[in-house]
Picture 1: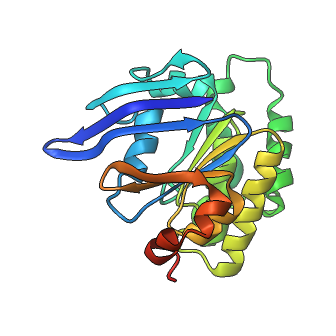
Picture 2: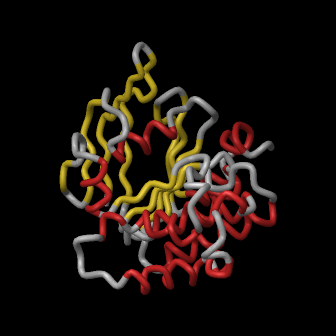
Amino acid sequence: MLIIKNLKVNYGYVNALKGVDIDIKGGQIVSILGSNGAGKTSLLKAVSGLVEDKSGTILFDGQDITNMSTEKIVSLGISHCPEGRRIFPQLTVEENLKIGAYVLRNKKVNLQEEFERVYAFFPKLKERRRQVAGTLSGGEQQMLAIGRALMSKPKLLMLDEPSLGLAPIIVNEIFKIIKQINSEGVTVLLIEQNANGALKISDYSYVLELGQVVSEGDSKKLLNDEGIRKSYLGA
C-alpha cells in the first residue's frame, strides 16, 4: 500500500531522515519505534506532504505522492492523526469530527453514517458530541483526534504517539481501539514511544535511529530480540 524509497528530509542544516526505505502492506499495523529525534514524526509529515525539503519516492497504491499537496493526499485515502492531538478546543466534539470529513464534501457520502461509524469506536464521543472539545479529558481528546482522522474514510491511518501523556488504563483502551479499526480494513502506521504496546499490537516494525532504519522485522520477533529489549523495552 505504501512504499517509501530513499526518503531524505532536511530542516535547514539538520538531516532528519537520511535515506529511509519502508514497505507497508495493506491490512497491516506497522509500528515505527525510536527515541526522540530519531525522525519518526518527520516520516509521517513527509508522507502527508507537510515538509518541503525532501527527496526520494513515496508511492501510495502505486501512485507517486512525493510532491503532492496535503489535501490531495488525504483525498486519496491517507489520514494523519498528529502528535499532541491538535483538536479545535473551542469547537464541539461533533464540529471537530465534521472538519475531518471536509475532503468528502464533493462525494455522495451520508455524513450521519460516518458520525455513527466513529461513535461505534468511541461511544464516549457520542455522549459528549455537543460538548466543547477543550473541556474533554486527555484520553477523550485523543479519541476525538483519532475519530476526526477516521472521518475522511482513510485506507491508511497514520497515528503519531496516540498514547502520549495518558494513564495506563486509557492507553490499553486506545490500543484495543486501534486493533479494532485495523480489523475493519484500515491499514495503520503507528508511531509510539510505548514500544512494548506497539510491538504487541503490530504485525511488522521498523526501528529508527538518527534518521535511519537500523532494524526491522516481524513485531513478535522484535519483542523478543535482546537488543531491542535493552534499548526500548527497559530490559
